[in-house]
Image (cartoon, rainbow, N blue to C red; front, side, top):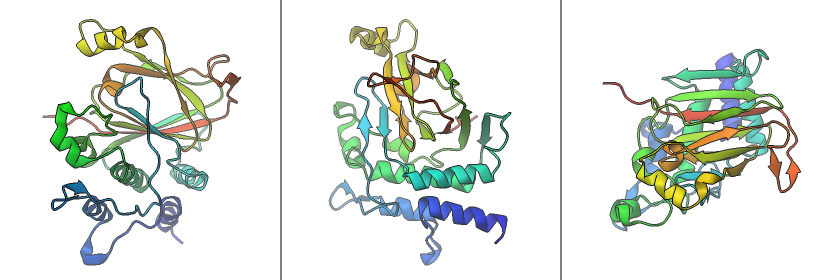
Length: 274
Protein backbone atom coordinates (compact mmCIF):
# COMPACT_ATOMS: atom_id res chain seq x y z
CA UNK A 1 0.00 0.00 0.00
CA UNK A 2 1.44 3.39 -1.03
CA UNK A 3 1.78 6.37 1.33
CA UNK A 4 -1.25 8.15 -0.17
CA UNK A 5 -3.43 5.04 0.14
CA UNK A 6 -2.22 4.57 3.72
CA UNK A 7 -3.29 8.12 4.59
CA UNK A 8 -6.69 7.59 2.95
CA UNK A 9 -7.14 4.42 5.00
CA UNK A 10 -6.37 6.36 8.18
CA UNK A 11 -8.90 9.03 7.23
CA UNK A 12 -11.58 6.44 6.45
CA UNK A 13 -10.97 4.85 9.84
CA UNK A 14 -11.13 8.22 11.56
CA UNK A 15 -14.16 9.74 9.86
CA UNK A 16 -15.85 7.03 7.81
CA UNK A 17 -16.10 6.61 4.06
CA UNK A 18 -17.38 9.97 2.85
CA UNK A 19 -16.98 9.47 -0.89
CA UNK A 20 -19.92 9.68 -3.26
CA UNK A 21 -19.51 8.36 -6.77
CA UNK A 22 -23.08 8.70 -7.99
CA UNK A 23 -23.33 11.07 -10.96
CA UNK A 24 -19.80 12.29 -10.29
CA UNK A 25 -20.94 14.08 -7.14
CA UNK A 26 -18.17 15.12 -4.77
CA UNK A 27 -18.42 14.45 -1.05
CA UNK A 28 -18.70 18.19 -0.37
CA UNK A 29 -21.53 18.58 -2.90
CA UNK A 30 -23.28 15.55 -1.45
CA UNK A 31 -23.10 16.90 2.07
CA UNK A 32 -24.46 20.29 1.08
CA UNK A 33 -27.28 18.75 -0.97
CA UNK A 34 -28.37 16.58 1.97
CA UNK A 35 -28.60 19.66 4.17
CA UNK A 36 -30.46 21.99 1.86
CA UNK A 37 -33.68 23.76 2.77
CA UNK A 38 -36.90 22.09 1.70
CA UNK A 39 -38.89 24.99 0.25
CA UNK A 40 -42.21 23.13 0.54
CA UNK A 41 -41.89 22.91 4.32
CA UNK A 42 -39.59 25.90 4.87
CA UNK A 43 -37.26 23.93 7.07
CA UNK A 44 -33.88 22.29 6.90
CA UNK A 45 -33.97 18.61 5.95
CA UNK A 46 -31.92 16.73 8.53
CA UNK A 47 -31.16 13.16 7.46
CA UNK A 48 -28.88 11.06 9.62
CA UNK A 49 -25.26 12.08 9.30
CA UNK A 50 -22.90 9.58 7.71
CA UNK A 51 -20.70 10.24 10.73
CA UNK A 52 -23.25 8.90 13.22
CA UNK A 53 -25.78 10.50 15.52
CA UNK A 54 -25.85 14.26 15.93
CA UNK A 55 -23.64 15.39 18.79
CA UNK A 56 -24.76 17.55 21.69
CA UNK A 57 -23.87 21.23 21.53
CA UNK A 58 -23.83 23.42 24.65
CA UNK A 59 -23.70 27.23 24.70
CA UNK A 60 -21.38 28.93 27.17
CA UNK A 61 -24.17 31.14 28.45
CA UNK A 62 -21.94 33.95 29.72
CA UNK A 63 -20.41 34.52 26.28
CA UNK A 64 -22.44 35.10 23.12
CA UNK A 65 -21.13 33.05 20.20
CA UNK A 66 -19.19 30.46 22.23
CA UNK A 67 -20.33 26.83 21.91
CA UNK A 68 -18.80 23.51 22.87
CA UNK A 69 -19.38 19.96 21.62
CA UNK A 70 -17.78 17.69 24.22
CA UNK A 71 -18.09 14.40 22.30
CA UNK A 72 -17.13 15.64 18.82
CA UNK A 73 -14.48 12.94 18.28
CA UNK A 74 -14.59 9.52 19.91
CA UNK A 75 -11.44 8.03 21.45
CA UNK A 76 -10.83 5.92 18.32
CA UNK A 77 -11.26 8.91 16.01
CA UNK A 78 -8.92 10.98 18.17
CA UNK A 79 -6.25 8.28 17.88
CA UNK A 80 -6.72 8.10 14.11
CA UNK A 81 -6.47 11.88 13.76
CA UNK A 82 -3.28 11.89 15.83
CA UNK A 83 -1.93 9.13 13.57
CA UNK A 84 -2.69 11.26 10.50
CA UNK A 85 -0.91 14.24 12.10
CA UNK A 86 2.09 12.09 12.97
CA UNK A 87 2.20 10.59 9.48
CA UNK A 88 2.47 14.10 8.03
CA UNK A 89 5.30 14.92 10.46
CA UNK A 90 3.52 17.37 12.75
CA UNK A 91 4.16 15.42 15.98
CA UNK A 92 7.57 13.90 15.30
CA UNK A 93 9.98 16.73 16.13
CA UNK A 94 10.05 17.46 19.86
CA UNK A 95 11.82 20.77 19.17
CA UNK A 96 8.86 22.02 17.13
CA UNK A 97 5.61 22.65 19.01
CA UNK A 98 3.65 24.42 16.27
CA UNK A 99 2.84 23.88 12.61
CA UNK A 100 0.52 25.80 10.32
CA UNK A 101 -0.68 25.72 6.76
CA UNK A 102 -2.46 28.21 4.52
CA UNK A 103 -4.52 27.71 1.36
CA UNK A 104 -5.25 24.18 0.19
CA UNK A 105 -5.73 21.99 3.26
CA UNK A 106 -4.68 18.34 3.56
CA UNK A 107 -7.40 15.65 3.38
CA UNK A 108 -7.73 15.22 7.16
CA UNK A 109 -8.32 18.99 7.66
CA UNK A 110 -10.87 19.10 4.85
CA UNK A 111 -12.66 16.13 6.37
CA UNK A 112 -12.75 17.83 9.77
CA UNK A 113 -14.29 20.89 8.11
CA UNK A 114 -16.99 18.73 6.52
CA UNK A 115 -17.73 16.97 9.82
CA UNK A 116 -18.04 20.32 11.63
CA UNK A 117 -20.45 21.63 8.99
CA UNK A 118 -22.60 18.50 9.12
CA UNK A 119 -22.82 18.44 12.90
CA UNK A 120 -23.78 22.11 13.06
CA UNK A 121 -26.38 21.61 10.34
CA UNK A 122 -27.91 18.56 12.04
CA UNK A 123 -27.98 20.19 15.46
CA UNK A 124 -31.30 21.17 17.01
CA UNK A 125 -29.73 24.59 17.72
CA UNK A 126 -29.35 25.40 14.02
CA UNK A 127 -32.20 26.41 11.76
CA UNK A 128 -31.29 28.24 8.59
CA UNK A 129 -34.87 29.16 7.71
CA UNK A 130 -35.61 30.56 11.18
CA UNK A 131 -32.40 32.59 11.13
CA UNK A 132 -33.39 34.09 7.80
CA UNK A 133 -36.91 34.91 8.99
CA UNK A 134 -36.19 36.23 12.48
CA UNK A 135 -32.93 38.10 11.91
CA UNK A 136 -32.02 40.42 14.75
CA UNK A 137 -35.30 39.76 16.56
CA UNK A 138 -34.33 36.16 17.28
CA UNK A 139 -33.38 35.99 20.98
CA UNK A 140 -32.47 32.31 20.97
CA UNK A 141 -28.72 31.64 21.05
CA UNK A 142 -27.44 30.71 17.61
CA UNK A 143 -24.95 27.91 17.20
CA UNK A 144 -23.40 29.26 13.99
CA UNK A 145 -24.64 31.83 11.45
CA UNK A 146 -25.66 30.39 8.05
CA UNK A 147 -23.53 32.94 6.19
CA UNK A 148 -20.47 31.51 7.91
CA UNK A 149 -21.54 27.87 7.69
CA UNK A 150 -22.05 27.95 3.90
CA UNK A 151 -18.99 29.94 2.91
CA UNK A 152 -16.58 28.10 0.62
CA UNK A 153 -14.23 26.98 1.83
CA UNK A 154 -15.41 26.86 5.42
CA UNK A 155 -11.76 27.04 6.55
CA UNK A 156 -8.54 27.51 4.59
CA UNK A 157 -5.94 27.70 7.36
CA UNK A 158 -5.03 25.45 10.24
CA UNK A 159 -2.56 25.49 13.10
CA UNK A 160 -1.48 22.49 15.15
CA UNK A 161 -0.14 23.32 18.62
CA UNK A 162 1.57 20.87 20.98
CA UNK A 163 1.68 21.80 24.66
CA UNK A 164 3.91 19.90 27.06
CA UNK A 165 2.91 19.78 30.78
CA UNK A 166 3.01 23.31 32.18
CA UNK A 167 2.90 25.00 28.75
CA UNK A 168 -0.04 27.15 27.71
CA UNK A 169 -0.94 30.21 25.67
CA UNK A 170 -1.26 33.84 26.75
CA UNK A 171 -4.54 35.76 26.65
CA UNK A 172 -5.25 36.94 23.11
CA UNK A 173 -7.81 37.58 20.41
CA UNK A 174 -7.02 35.87 17.12
CA UNK A 175 -5.53 38.18 14.49
CA UNK A 176 -7.89 40.28 12.37
CA UNK A 177 -6.38 38.70 9.24
CA UNK A 178 -8.78 35.84 9.94
CA UNK A 179 -12.52 35.98 9.32
CA UNK A 180 -15.23 35.37 11.89
CA UNK A 181 -15.88 31.76 12.90
CA UNK A 182 -13.05 29.73 14.48
CA UNK A 183 -13.00 26.05 15.48
CA UNK A 184 -10.64 24.48 18.06
CA UNK A 185 -10.34 20.71 18.57
CA UNK A 186 -8.63 19.39 21.72
CA UNK A 187 -6.68 16.13 21.84
CA UNK A 188 -4.77 14.03 24.37
CA UNK A 189 -5.18 16.03 27.60
CA UNK A 190 -7.88 18.06 29.33
CA UNK A 191 -7.37 21.70 30.22
CA UNK A 192 -9.21 24.81 31.36
CA UNK A 193 -9.42 27.64 28.83
CA UNK A 194 -10.23 30.99 30.44
CA UNK A 195 -12.11 33.78 28.67
CA UNK A 196 -12.20 37.45 29.68
CA UNK A 197 -13.41 40.58 27.88
CA UNK A 198 -10.92 42.61 25.87
CA UNK A 199 -9.68 45.82 27.45
CA UNK A 200 -11.16 48.50 25.24
CA UNK A 201 -13.22 51.60 25.76
CA UNK A 202 -16.07 53.05 23.75
CA UNK A 203 -17.48 49.71 22.58
CA UNK A 204 -21.21 49.45 23.27
CA UNK A 205 -21.16 45.64 23.38
CA UNK A 206 -18.23 45.65 25.79
CA UNK A 207 -19.98 48.18 28.03
CA UNK A 208 -23.00 45.85 28.20
CA UNK A 209 -20.70 42.98 29.18
CA UNK A 210 -19.19 45.14 31.93
CA UNK A 211 -22.66 46.04 33.24
CA UNK A 212 -23.44 42.33 33.50
CA UNK A 213 -20.47 41.96 35.85
CA UNK A 214 -18.60 39.50 33.63
CA UNK A 215 -15.65 41.81 32.99
CA UNK A 216 -14.23 41.39 36.49
CA UNK A 217 -14.02 37.59 36.30
CA UNK A 218 -12.55 35.01 33.96
CA UNK A 219 -14.96 32.48 32.52
CA UNK A 220 -13.50 28.95 32.75
CA UNK A 221 -14.34 26.40 30.04
CA UNK A 222 -13.25 22.78 30.41
CA UNK A 223 -11.84 21.33 27.19
CA UNK A 224 -11.70 17.53 27.24
CA UNK A 225 -9.98 15.30 24.66
CA UNK A 226 -12.18 15.07 21.56
CA UNK A 227 -14.09 18.26 22.32
CA UNK A 228 -14.69 21.07 19.83
CA UNK A 229 -15.39 24.72 20.51
CA UNK A 230 -16.78 27.22 18.02
CA UNK A 231 -16.15 30.95 18.45
CA UNK A 232 -17.94 33.60 16.43
CA UNK A 233 -19.27 37.13 16.90
CA UNK A 234 -18.65 38.46 20.41
CA UNK A 235 -16.73 35.35 21.49
CA UNK A 236 -14.35 35.76 18.57
CA UNK A 237 -13.82 39.55 18.72
CA UNK A 238 -14.71 40.81 22.22
CA UNK A 239 -13.27 38.09 24.44
CA UNK A 240 -9.67 37.03 24.94
CA UNK A 241 -8.93 33.37 25.54
CA UNK A 242 -5.95 31.83 27.31
CA UNK A 243 -4.63 28.59 28.78
CA UNK A 244 -2.47 28.83 31.89
CA UNK A 245 -1.19 25.37 32.81
CA UNK A 246 0.99 26.48 35.70
CA UNK A 247 0.25 24.83 39.07
CA UNK A 248 -2.90 26.22 40.69
CA UNK A 249 -4.56 27.45 37.49
CA UNK A 250 -5.94 24.19 36.10
CA UNK A 251 -8.60 23.45 38.71
CA UNK A 252 -11.77 21.52 37.89
CA UNK A 253 -14.35 20.71 40.58
CA UNK A 254 -11.80 21.53 43.25
CA UNK A 255 -9.10 19.25 41.87
CA UNK A 256 -5.98 19.97 39.86
CA UNK A 257 -6.12 18.54 36.33
CA UNK A 258 -3.32 16.05 35.66
CA UNK A 259 -0.87 17.61 33.24
CA UNK A 260 -0.10 15.62 30.10
CA UNK A 261 0.86 16.54 26.56
CA UNK A 262 -2.01 18.37 24.87
CA UNK A 263 -2.48 18.81 21.13
CA UNK A 264 -4.93 21.25 19.58
CA UNK A 265 -6.04 21.79 16.00
CA UNK A 266 -7.41 25.25 15.16
CA UNK A 267 -9.27 25.85 11.89
CA UNK A 268 -9.73 29.37 10.55
CA UNK A 269 -10.41 31.23 7.31
CA UNK A 270 -8.19 33.99 5.97
CA UNK A 271 -9.79 37.30 5.05
CA UNK A 272 -9.91 37.90 1.33
CA UNK A 273 -7.47 40.50 0.03
CA UNK A 274 -8.46 43.03 -2.59
